[in-house]
Amino acid sequence: MTDVASPAPAVRGRGRHRRAGDRIYRSSFFLLVSTVVTAGLSFVFWVVVARFYTPAQVGLATSLISATSLLATFSLLGLNNTLIRFPAEREARNAQISQAMVLVTVVGCLAGAIYLAGLPLYGAQLAFVRDNWLSAAAFAGFCGCAAASMLVKSVFNAARIPEYNVLIDGLTQGASKVAVPAVLTGLGVFGIVASAGVGYVATVVVAVVVLWRRLGFRIDLRTRGTRLREKFGFSVASHVSNLINLAPILATPLIVLHHLGAAQAGYYFVAFQIAAMLNAVSTAVGEAVFAEVSHEQSRFRELMLRSARIIAAVQVPAAAVVVLGGGLLLRVFGGGYAENARPLLTVLAVAALPVALNTWACFALKLAQRMRELIAANTIMAVLSIGLGSYFADRGLVWIGYTWAVGNAVAGVFATVSLVLRSRASRAAGFSPPIPETPPELPPAAAPWPSGAEETHWAGDGTAAPFADEAPFPTGPADPYGAGLSYPHAAAPADSYEAGHSFSFFSNRPSSERSAP
Image (cartoon, rainbow, N blue to C red; front, side, top):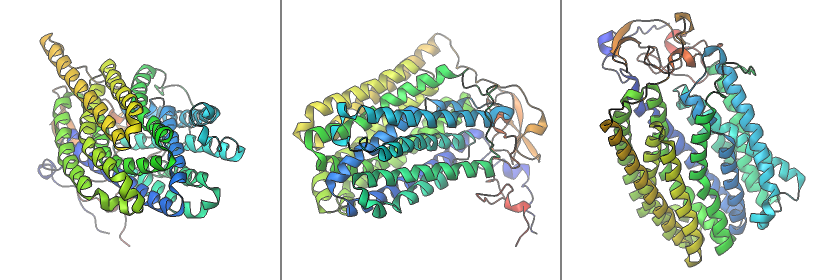
């Protein structure tokens, strides 16, 4: 057996984990990889679908799949943010996750059923789903599984191991979807919807297995100590802003379907899916910043500026690539897509820049707890995108892209100006940033990582605190999580990326502690 000893403190002091906040690069990287894998396999999925189904069938199915995503997001109830910002203490962490998963799954199923019941009012062309009780029940179940799969992603982000989202949210969901469409052509339009639903179901099953193996997760339905009721106000405020932000994603396909027909709705959806790969860059970096600043709030300004540089470095060249090569991408779907969706895709690629500004500024408002400004910014974006889109839709598909760009640009400027003005006002009044909430200190035995050589680093409150190389993040008075992310049944550190340790998805020990084959 080869035993790799821990490096000396001087060496570790130069490592990429010297400061907890420096993890923004690593977290952003894995979230971006997860996004790219998800988007890439989604791209393959729609290529397969386009080969086996007509544009009219694709147009109808995209409306239902968009509805599934939005209904799942609605069903999260903001608990995805609460799990990151306010994790329960060690003894109640399993209960917090269990209750959140059960709640969002049930709400997702109910939301899907309500959506189907109201189809005659806003989607008469989609009523075929509710006319068959099997397809209606399946659609409602897909909505519940989609909500649970979104929630699990936040669990891994909260534990600061976003690399698992590559396996679960990316590979598992994407590969499951790609394997099904050709088999379900006999179901017509619902075959496309069912293919996406299979991906959601597979994601939930694999996620629960990984949580059980990696973090020692066990079903626990106790109600005490979960902090879900105590933080209900935070959940609601963040949830409302997310819903408003995502409203155009549901409304726009219906607008295109109503004004331009099913075929144009199919062209729109394919172009938007490609543009979504660009928009996901700022979202992934924003999620990483949210986890990091929640952990170390004193570095708010530094981490936000760092995230802006990351977004700019990736977003601008990626948008240029799509503008120049969008025609080639669309030809993969067929000649009709390249001819009809190319102008829209070009506009959406350029619009990725104002989308990035809006996303970045809204994450900053959320971290600064400026919830009124956050909701106002998202409302501006939704009203302009939906309102102008409805007004100009008859002029052609490309005008949908123009209105999307305008809505995000105005909202992004508003959010940025609001953040700057409130920050200046707070400094002028002598206000200091709020102090992160600190849970009760736990005994050393509750720490989720082994003891080892330590060095001293400066915590957010100005005190000296030990830094263990094996720890996924430092513990101390300024750490809002502390040992709160330790799981009762977990037997491994939450992060095995330290020097000398290689990583295995389904192992509870770093490779340096296992015997060589």
